[in-house]
Length: 423
Ligand code: EPZ
Image 1 (tube, rainbow, N blue to C red):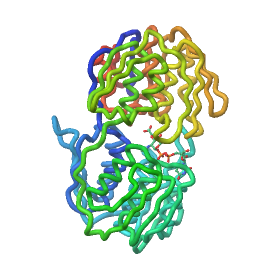
Image 2: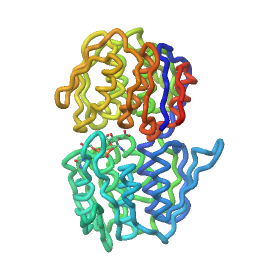
Image 3: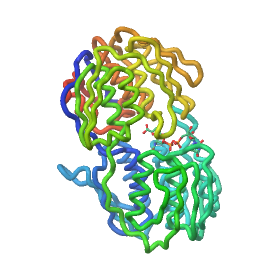
Image 4: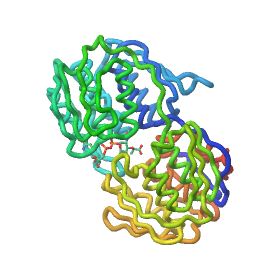
């Protein structure tokens, strides 16, 4: 398994281009199952989870192909009627977002057999709301042998209220509603930019959706032949942008992030300014200047537009060397503090009490061998390594590779002393 070796203490300076959003690419690639023909999706990040989704689509019978060289961010997906609507456990267990094929397969082909994802490091992460939402559209759902067996001759428009805001739950039910007979009203929907991007892509394909970006979406179902193949660019990855913004802040650097959407990062920008960073944004780019030592900040994660849970671990790395104490509350997932013990090995002083972490800022961190446990925890350890004195070895970097495209290359270009040790 690959490792990353980071020799800390280097200020990051320069320009970094933000890749397409992983969490927009995954639902949009799943949405190609809603229409036959050749779909073209651009600005698709080249990272492990997208490769897994393309592998899953291929098994189902939708053949995706990525361009090469300068075209490597363009993906075409060829979808025909010859589809095998099954998502096997071996792929679903490696990537829970595989469950996103459930809604489109059910809507387009009237049946789907999708493995239950099981839990993961950050929590139980059930899909009960996905299933309840599909049932509200008339699906017949049965759980057997670790699989969801879903059937519906034709989904019918219905009303459903998500009792918890769920990103992929909203996406799954939205995609199903697009081809239902009649009108669906979906309430308490997630409003993340990636959900908005999916809805807009569906509209360009011929779907009829109102209330995009709000908590209530009204979907007027259309006939199958009303949908045409997707031709759409993926929006910039706000979590990658946020991660690089914190990398700049934690090293006291000066970095301009290009091809990003600053307005998707308002909650983080506010916290970084509170911590002493200077942030200026223009159309499509933002410049971050970090302070010599950040001030402490308090934060709680909530669904968009609040502070994103996917940035919690990264902000904690910044707070660990802040001047003062910070209180960080994780409200979305039940077990998303796996990075705390590893940060502790580097000298951070963090005490966890249920959903709240109390971070007492220390003057310096010391490099150490640490273990990545999940995607954003591994990003947090990289950020801490950029600041720490001496050498940090981050193990199990496959977690990082799931959600970031060539992160170490981007950091090295900005002046970080970071190398991948291949094994
Ligand atoms: C999406 O996961 C993201 N993944 C996650 O990003 C992100 O952390 C999460 O949304 C929250 O923003 C993708 O978009 C592919 P949820 P998702 O359903 O949809 C509970 C990353 O690092 N819930 O919004 O799986 C659930 O347990 C990943 O890129 C139910 O109870 O998250 C959680 O407590 C990690 N029943 C809360 O809702 C359900 O049926 C929010 O989860 C569904 C969810």
